[in-house]
Length: 345
Figure 1 (cartoon, rainbow, N blue to C red):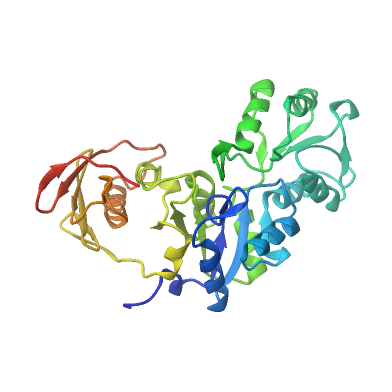
Figure 2: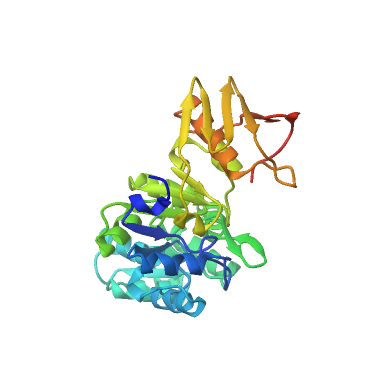
């Protein structure tokens, strides 16, 4: 119905944090206000994060400092997921070498595991999570233990993390360093695995949640794996262009510029004889070429969000199943003034 917002179809939001709510210590413009409106409207809210460097209580306290609504149990982290995976696969009292933060070590102790300090302690398993203070000796100690026979769990494999100064290496980059020395893959506990999302939804008692994130390979893939609706925000890692080219499993149902898009109507996308229309923008596919007909253009020459949505709908319909990223050719044309080159936000 006209005037309905994107959220009208959902009873809860499962929101990522880095690149969605904040970048580094600072809130993303409009994010806090949107989250406040959600709670006022009675929409349930949980934060699902792959960052294992802080306890849920510390994360919730940071959110409250920013003005966002957050109780401690609204934060579901990959550190908790990692500890749960430990408890599933290893008996109580097993020796665990924690390569990560004190918050991760705390979660490990909460599931009755014994935290040890080095590979010399013959750990049964290594669990690796993000901590900005990690250094080469820590990664080397993990490799020594794993090569000596310890199992290996990674809380997440995000290659990058948004910070207030830009994009920095994430836990996945540190996991890759260890992988190079041990030559096999870890078990992964957090996103894009589905249990983290199911846990968050169960805590809220939500039946139809919307997963909101900035990363296709963790947030969107994880939400899709959990069979939940997904929305990509363009305030963090991934862009409309990377969404366009994404493999099938990483395609979001919705694309919004930022969190405040949750409180706005989402335009319907229609299709007539192969032409997909979103608002005033249209797109069609011929072979490996997408043609977008633009009614308007931003000053920097990049097409607007509705054009990006139309292009994604057209291309995803044409290439409905793919296990690899795609590389379509894109042609932009003005509805009146002729063909021009452009780009996606």
